Length: 83
Image (cartoon, rainbow, N blue to C red):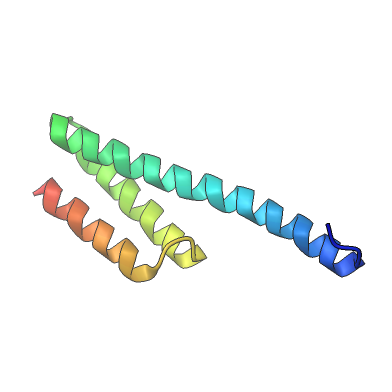
């Protein structure tokens, strides 16, 4: 643990950010998984779940949780599965 006050604060802030980012990334993965499962099962609400997954990917990319090209790639693959 650091001795300097500003360094102590940075550690606390970084831990908080890490928890928030982990939760957001996990939620994004969950929405993608639900959409993929709905598509394979042929569920009625599959298209709604794909839209939700796309939204989650865009949000994650805008916050810097994943790279924008990674988000685009995942959206493209999801769209390909939807057709």
